[in-house]
Every structure is written in C-alpha cells, then in structure tokens.
Image 1 (cartoon, helix red, strand yellow):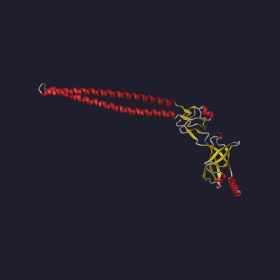
Image 2 (spheres, helix red, strand yellow; image 1 turned 180 degrees about the vertical axis):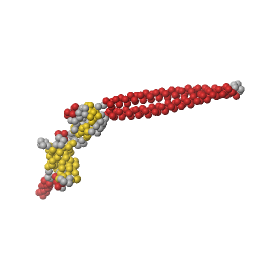
Image 3 (tube, one colour; image 1 turned 30 degrees about the vertical axis):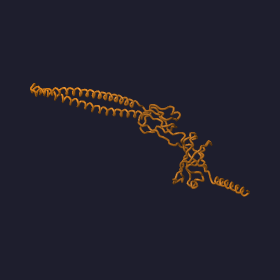
Image 4 (cartoon, rainbow, N blue to C red; image 1 turned 120 degrees about the vertical axis):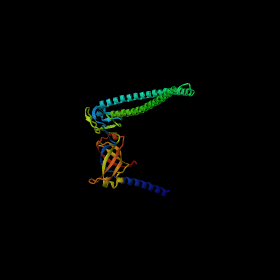
Length: 312
C-alpha cells in the first residue's frame, strides 16, 4: 500500500513537472503591426458624366448599406434614350399586330378564292360534258376553261400573299426582339449612371461633389466591412527558427494591444515563406476577432503579444 502511494505521488510530480517544463519552454515575443481592412472593394464609375446627386448621409457618416445609392450622374440624355426605345418598342408591337391581321386577311382571301375555284372547276366539268354531247359549242368550252385558269391564278396569288404576310410577321418578330434588346441596353445605360454599395460597410475616399464631371473607370469610393480586419506585421528570420516556441504559427492565438491599452484577440492566418533581402523580415497576417475588430482604426499602430494557445 505504501509503495502504491509513492508511485502515485511520483506520477503526479512527473505530470506537474512536464507541464511546467512545457510552459517554461514557450517564450512570448512582442511585435509591432498595422491594422488593415480585409476584402476592400473599389467602386468605379461605369460611364462618364457629371454628378447630379450624392448621398448626404454616407458623405457625413462614411457608412453605407447594401444596395444604397451613393452617387447619381446626370441622366437626362439616358432617360430620353430610354423613352425613345420604349416608344420604338410600342411601334414594333403595333406592327406585329398588323402582321397578324394581314395573315388573317390573307387566309380569308385564300379560302374565298379556293371556294370560287371549286365552283369554276365544277362549272367547267359540266360545260365539258355538254360539249361532248354537242349541246354547247367550242367557244363556250374555251370561255369556261379560261375562267378555270383565272381562278387557278387567283388561288396562287392569294397563297403568295399569305406567304408574304407570314414572312412579314417573321421580320416583325425579329424587329421586336431587336427593339427589346435596345430597350434593355438603354436601361443598362441608365443603371450605369448610378453607383451603389455592394454590401454594408465603411466608405473610404468618398468625396464626390455635385457638378463635378467624372470619367469612366475612375474611382468613386472604397468600401470594407468593419468586422473584417487584420493586422500586418513583420518577423525576423532568426525568430522564426523557433517559431513554435514563440507562438508564431498559422492558427496560433495572439493578443493585439492598442495604444490606449485595450486589447483584441487575433489568430495568425498567414506566415510568409519568403524573407526580404535587406531587412531579413518575413510578412505575417493576423485576423482580428470580429467582435472587437470594428473598434480598431485602419492604419492604427498596435502591439502584438504571442500566446501559446493554438486554435486550429
């Protein structure tokens, strides 16, 4: 029993000494870094023009929400072009209705001349029988045959008119599709005069003035999410020789301390593999906790203290 107690005590001391050795083996380092925004989005003007409207709320607060209109360019010419395209589309739709009506008329004509042809055909057959019996002369037969020929031509002309009407409708349908595409194009031109926020966030370099003229592709603003920030820092190569011992590894936790003493948790998301030739520094990136990231200012200088805790 005594030996068992001694063994148990030795086991506990071994575990405690291992833990102490492990803690003593870790050596925290202090680094300096700069707060940056993740996924910063640049907003550009899609077309050239002069500024007509600006969001005064975003201009004052530098905040925006998804879909908010930030800047509107002068749209008078675009609106006029859109209305012209709409009127053109209405005209094309009316032309299509006329084509449908023409087809119905042509079909009715074909039906009438075919009925007339059948009547003339029966009349010709009777006249032919009478001629064979000697009841009518050859002149009467020729007159009946001429009426049959004219009726045949009438049927052919009516069918040709029907074919032309169908072809005309096909062209009207093509013109209508072109008109719809033109209307969509004018609508896109109108939409390109508006700069909208792609998501909720904070605006940077947002300084538009009403009346200023801008060119296509020029920068309108930048927007980023306040809870998606990181810290960029640089680590000496000799420190990275013992990266695990100083807590500099992807997934390791750090404490980011501001100049006012307040801190924010972060995690190493990137530790570079290429050193700068002159400074022999390696770039590293720390993702900040979204809960406290909005309190950090962009380009703010912070202090970083590594932590033995690993989160991955």
